[in-house]
Length: 338
Image (cartoon, rainbow, N blue to C red):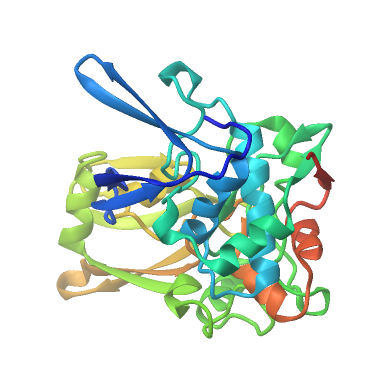
């Protein structure tokens, strides 16, 4: 929940669990600004942190973006996070609060994660959000788009206008999307220069391009959790989005076949791949049976909205946070709401 800003001491909670159902799930002691409301619901203690939007963002920005990145990227992150906050306010109203502290809303980690540079980015953009059709934009973002953001894949038709996929590079270097199969292979294995989110000096290269290798046995075990098709013979991409992200694929097994659709489903079934922008190659063993399946991929996350690594790359090139946000949300406009 939110309230007008009111500088007060912090409250520390011990053994706070976070990242539920994810590989990074853990627990730690955390301190928070603002006030705490406690209640008991069916024997479960519910703790709600009551604070202002700006105080909340102090704990969101450093949890969502490294604060050693350039300041203009941090400002773009602060505006996107503020806009998303305003758009999603009340998302958990039926639970008795406005927003959760997990990726379902935005990651909020409290005071310990705050940094001077992160707070500066929040303060220097105070009250600034993105708007479209007089509404706050749900300005979602992902870690690394791999070189091309996706169109809207989340079902909100009004969001299409500001979630249109774009090449994450300057105008003079852009290839023509959608890519042919040959061009897709080159894009993933030998990406061209000038892609904003290729920033090895700020972020691990494995966030931009990655390889995942599964043995035939490993892959069959994963697919069996979705559909028992028997020994895996082929993986066929049957539909890609214009950005190159896989939207539909067919698993051909010895006993039967199955179809997997939608970005997150595909990534989960295939062992929590970093993104759905990938190409699959098959290595064959004895009797020409598949031995290994190799996934060559690009990006980390859903790739919709703002590419965080791309915002860093643009900032490194001297772009302002306004230019960064116009790049990723081309039809939205900035508005100061307080």
